[in-house]
Image (cartoon, helix red, strand yellow):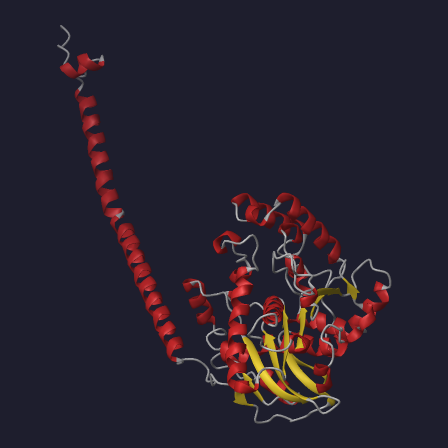
Length: 479
């Protein structure tokens, strides 16, 4: 039988003609199976699309709800509503001891070393200190400031809805005989949602702080009004502000103070200026004294605020005379690129640092950062006589907190090596802002140290124990 004539398709493809009925049936079956598969796919996949659409709709609703909640909270803050009640104006410390002169008072605060349990430290106080030379280091005043810096951190719990925590600052300052206090800045800066609001709105360049006053009398009967400023350390979204070093070019300057700390310090100085002006009126500020203290971010902010108060004594609008400005800070980060930090104008600022603590080493000195005033260093691993001093510190910590000291002084070796390696890998602060700089910094951080362990050396309670275990001669000027 002659072969069938090939079709156009067969001719075009060069395929052999197919006339087998069985083959045709198989092809039809395959096409039917493919069509069935498509139909099955269409039947199976619509629910996935519907779920995706639903999830997208829920995300949009959640985003809209969050935006409305943030807007509502901002309006509440503007009106002074929706927060744990606390007057905006300074209020009298009704339970103030009214104590004057020299005395010792018990002051309570919380510490992470005991799971946020309350501990109590005896604080020696003397009103006569504020008639002495502020450039002469006062170890008893430094001890008192170390405790009050920790109290500033503990105060946050009082400003959280539903908390039964006491007002630690109010109780501490009442015990020290202060007359009134303002802790208004803790409002809207202590609730979790408020920290979310600050993160979303980019308003995290702030701190919480207290301002309290006391009329003090000197050995010759002279009087001053002491303004104590105690600044809280990093909290919630404020950790982001710790990374906001700023850019001098934005200010058309060669160097600036760390922007995140600078903004917080400016708020405090403006607050003090308003309050002091209202208090002294036409009497002038000649009998005003200022005391600044803080730990970590609070230390950086206190350091800058004190330096600005020092600067103002050189102009027409001083907050207080230079001889009446005092400042003690603890675990203070590097905070400025200015080359005037060592000027005698700032000799009334003392920064106490733990060699095993990484926080005072950041931002890096090799990037041009430093602190105003004078640095004093606690004993560090490898120093002569360290073992005996550390034994005293451990005993003091156990007596104070009721638990063993958690920090490992040998971490100093790893911290020193880490800072050197980061400086080599990231030569400038501008390099840190690059993807490579971030990767190098994070890589070095997690490969060389145990961050959680190293942070034990940053605890306020560790600094307090060291301060109580040492005398002034055992602190070393930074090299």
